[in-house]
Image (cartoon, rainbow, N blue to C red; front, side, top):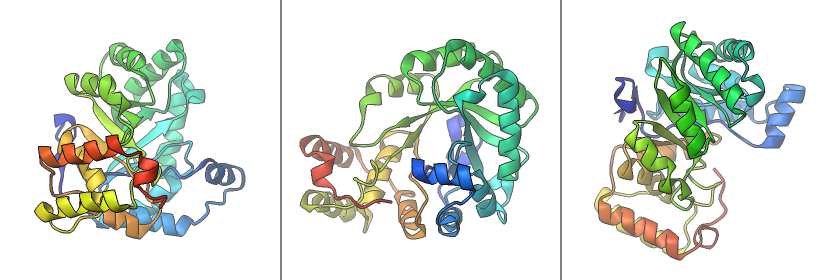
Length: 295
């Protein structure tokens, strides 16, 4: 079970986590009817992640998956887990955010949240109010770290500045080897300021999972040095080989895929292998290089 130090805080997490976002129609059905399609299978996928050595689980009040996380973790020691969730902009006022946190704690069946995140940007005043509430929650021991999600560089800097008592621990962004736009601004800023990056859609909506001939060449070359590897494992390993502060969170929906994704941990590509993968993606569009298999 590989563990890395989250931002040098002493909190040890798996370098690959799992996400629990499914799709808008799934969320709408869960919210309106209480029906969570394939709930048992997806809960088992989260449980499989834990059994495979992954202790980092990301959810959100919007996803309607917090109760599934609760079910998946019920037989695991809480101190062995790193649980992250998010609050919606509609709850960014001081009192509403505190109330949202209390609801998330209840749904998750836990006394504290490791990483509490603002889900997306809003007005400056609302963000300030929300961060003030998050610092109160941290004082109370109900959250341990404060993060943001889907913030541009300007608002990331503002959030860091507006926090008075605690550091900005993380940001969560759409980031993968085929979608690297944040490497020009967010990534260097976070590196300089010791801010972790949680990479969602790390397999590009499933486009980085099934290999054509070019993908198979990459698998063959990497496997020569590291033993048998699959393309999802290589693509996820790209994050942890290149950066020590970026953590991919592929979706947990299929236990077999989760078990496979866990194989991205425990090894590292060298610089030449990283460049080989990046060059191949630059030359060939992901939609033609990779298949449409969805994780």
